[in-house]
Length: 299
Image (cartoon, rainbow, N blue to C red; front, side):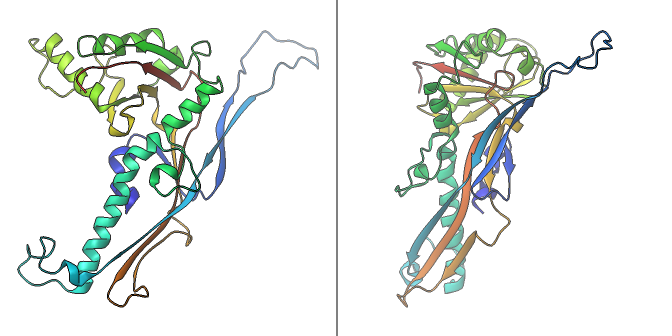
């Protein structure tokens, strides 16, 4: 249920099922090409370059108890014509709790920071923004490597120009050649972009909508994807869908969802256990550009 409710996010990423613990991912850079013929038997050039990364999922759980009798006569039950049974109340509560679990992942998928002794979803795994911060610290994402750009200050007056400048000047030609690029942005940046677009192009004949889906000037190849979880990260991310890996299980009996009687005979217990984790398949400039901005207005 939590992953089903996460579909608005997962639609822009690639889900890997049956991952419990670590799975090796990455890419192979192969530079094979035709050359002028050589007859020497030892005329061999180069070997494939393999860059490995680890997609790790972590086991998490939630245990909540509730008394169905305490819910009778509340807004939860008085909107129906016939009284709800304990079983029906339990079903509704299970759905609401699963929905709450899912909602916590919307921010955690970006900003979570693994803490094995923690007690929230933000402690379960490292989110994409946290992974980026760690790679920046390790100097694996830098301007010199071509997968990082400092965008300075972004505001409603310059947001469109800044995003297009980052695409034109910082995104690699290999990434630009992709037929569909995802541009993940904080929702505040997306809102500013819509206002900027209306101010710049509101009067032109082809502007038929206020909401914009693609970055203007990219021939509809760069899709704007606003993400609530990117708030306060100061980051935008150019990449492709298959580079954003979301690991889960969903296939084994290790994951459980139960509604059961606890020691308290008056209560019901909601219990859920699942695996979850995220990783970039590659942080090479051919598949990723991280843009860092310092300040925005109109938050």
